[in-house]
Length: 197
Length: 246
Image: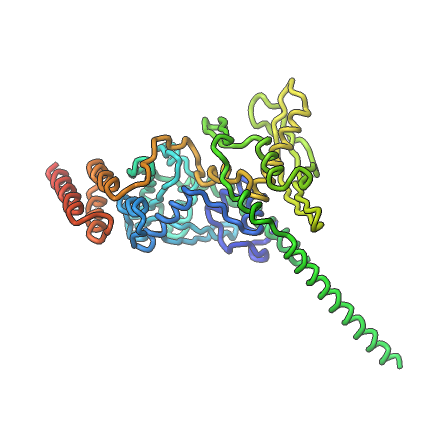
């Protein structure tokens, strides 16, 4: 397997976005991170980004729908908070938490897309397990609660789901992260070779 | 004499190398300027997939995935580049014992290459992608292979050129995608809508901390008039009082 320290990867960390893309389709990862880098955003993604930006800046965007979402989405002591943690296998995980309360150890994630969220989906979300794993490794204690706030653009209402993750959930995710990271290293090595040739 | 000859040879070699590098750079520069799409093609590629061409099918776990048919991709390639200016070929193919569903006997996979050709300028652009399809008993092998080829073509066109990418990208956005929120959307939200929704939200929300946060947000918000803000605050204070007594 390629060595993490020797191979130059597109990012020095491994985010959930990278993980989900490379696990689903390595070729798509290659295209997105080594290709021309064309971004194809749909309207829902653009709206989500506007809401996240507005919350991160703590300012109203001047768009009624965005400002309404900002008004009804709960705030946390840390908003749009980047946390990095090293996990076994020389992998640096990075998570951008929409909301985080380090004192109470509560993590929040906002969803503004078209997906209709349910408790079952929240309980099985890999993204939340990924974030829990980062918190566990970074703060050496488990999260007391994980909250997913789903803002429905259809109703303008926020629905909150609460969940937790056990150490077993994180241990189950680890081999998948390791496998996906190895794929990133392999792709990076191939692309770097091609670039230098 | 020998030394002088060697020096001359080395200088000549250096010059040749410099020349080669310059030629290479020049040819590269030339290629970069050549490989470009016309504004009309760019516009066509950026067009969102019309909803009538977006299909849905059930996938594992009772979920639904959106897709476009192979014919749509072929029609778009023809429309954007012309029938004679693109080709799709299979570079590699194989089989695996992987069973995507119980009825399958295995799986056939292909690696295909979509080539866009500009005959006038003399360039080709390659976009590779893989596709797969289960092999079912009683179904001709050729059918499974054809489906895998179509899958590869769709992926190459989506990733390489962005044709119908918005369909699969939507799935990417809704990562642990389940059902889509089918409730009718509030058309172009106005400040009045927001105010009415905020009233409804306050009525539903029971978390005291969140309600207190809303008061703080209202103090700095430009979304509502002062009267509307007072109305919302009044409702929140009533709710807080009620929950305190409870």
